[in-house]
Amino acid sequence: MSTSPLSATPPDVAGKNSTSRVIFASFIGTAIEFYDFYVYATAAALVIGPVFFPHSSATAQALSAFVTFGIAFVARPIGSFLFGHFGDRIGRKSTLVASLLVMGLSTTLIGFVPGYDSIGSLAPILLCVLRFGQGIGLGGEWGGAALLATENAPPGKRGWFGMFPQLGPSIGFLASNGLFFGLALSLSDEQFRSWGWRVPFLVSAVLVAIGLYVRLKIAETPAFQAAIDREERVRVPVATLISQHWRPTILGALAMVVCYTLFYNATTFSLSYGVSTLHIPRQTFLGMLCIAVVFMALATPLSAWAADRFGRKPVLIAGILAAIVSGFAMAPLLGSGSTPLVLLFLIIELFLMGVTFAPMGALLPELFPTNVRYTGAGVSYNLGGILGASVAPYIAQVLAAHGGLTWVGAYVSCAAVVSLVGVLCMRETRHTQLM
Image (cartoon, rainbow, N blue to C red):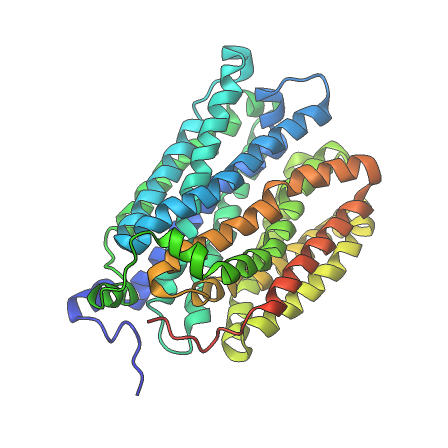
């Protein structure tokens, strides 16, 4: 009879890695990390341009803000290589603590950077450096959180356990967007641009302290401890990954493209477009995003359950096909400017984001052996970010300016096709043993 990883560990370790503690530690870290990341995404859509890039053109400001947004996605694979190396060599726990510190410190310091009017060109330089730090930290976060959950999961429940790191982003986004929503309601535009936008960045310091407390209480995962006992660790995980596991790395990255494109076009681009072009009040659009992200959170456990029941590939294929169709809804729904139709568009896109995102918490770790799993899962995840998210708001902004929302919708559909190819070419991983 097979035993769960939790039951196979010594009693003291099993106690530290109880089901509730593992779930909470994997969830809270990604919630905080993505809170930090989404705080910047929202600020980029609303205020980063005029504060740090005071060009005469609003379009130039928006494009400059979205360039700084993309910097972190370039940094994320670097973070995956860096933290993945130590995660596969030293262990999951200590690496997760370090990634959380890097991300939290970078986010908090952004809240203290003066604007262009105060220190000139040094302001955007400091902003870019700290944004790069955000990307480094997040690059090391997700892979470790997914491994913490899946390497402790009982048989047949890996998709469900892997869902909790995937649920963190919904909560992180809801917290960051909700805070911006509250500030939009309580502050004037002048107050918000002067100092109000900095508050969510400063709140990150408190959240990181909570996350560190939780993660310092957990023990190493059973799968990694078993790899140590069998002396299976490799000296340079990234070299082994590139030489022996390049194919699943590429396919995993392609599979992630649809998740990122759906999310950042439905949030960062749509928020910027809705406020600046459709002239929907900022607080109204933020409120609609808060409602829509609830549907993303609801889709996450449903999709994870289905992935355990039917397999990773069938669930992903169904979600990706729906995402391809959803691109055609962008112009008539978002472009209408009607609040109910815009809300419907946001709900559709974020629900599909949850459907396609949830299985990744189990799928990407299942593609790799234990000795390169941290590196492989993280690199695939964050390479997908470069392809699907780093340039997504920028490309969408350019396409909207030159061809309208129909072109932006076509871009979303094309990104989904890229993911469909990746998923069709990979193996089903539901019955893979994480040894």
